[in-house]
Length: 95
Image (cartoon, rainbow, N blue to C red; front, side, top):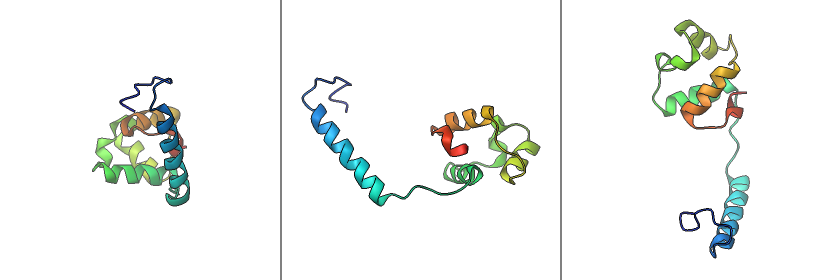
């Protein structure tokens, strides 16, 4: 990908397309889609990044964060956007 620099006419672009298709096929067969609620995904990401509730200031006050993690409150659009930016992931996992 570094070699092609986005040039559609680069000689390696065909190889890149083939490798990309093979990777997609492999992942569809061998890598299961994670299951869970948006809160489960958030808890997983918190664990992976070594975060505690107090580190999620973009969600709001400590009380709001506790309610979200306890499943008593859903994430709103602003919070979803902030989390997807923080964790560099699709907002869809929080919906």
